[in-house]
Image (cartoon, rainbow, N blue to C red; front, side, top):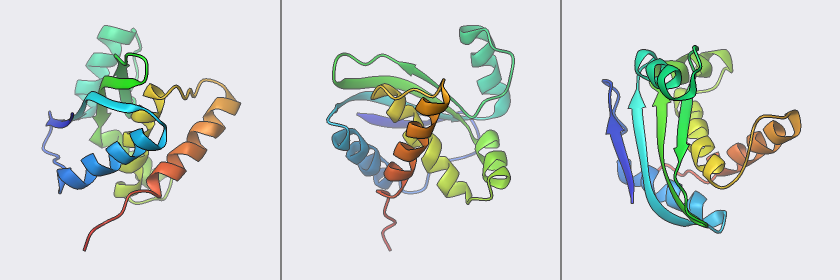
Amino acid sequence: MISFNYESDFTLENESQFEAWIQQIIRSEHKSEGEINYIFCDDAYLLEINQKYLDHDYYTDIISFDYSVANELHGDIFISIERVTENAQTFEVSFQHELLRVMAHGILHYCGYKDKSDTDTQLMRQKEDEKISMFHVEH
């Protein structure tokens, strides 16, 4: 089950569309869906989590806590909407594109992809792009 939670003024439009896309990502990586919670928040909220649980004192766009068991994905994915907005401007992409990138990023971590080395980061970016291209807007 995929759920969307809001700790800021932001809300996703058409949650079912995002849920279907995330399920497609999970299937494309030959994993199964467990309980995945997306929590959309602001910088202050995510900074507090970063300090309290990871002992990091800086802003970030995403923090994911992975509770997966074998191939069944479970976890909490916290996303700072403020960081997503700023990163979209920095990277000259739309807010939607950057939001999709970080949403996919959390799932990809659960699938075993890392981003600590240059090689790992390159593969992560490639996978993010692949998964973003799977998102289709219904008109």
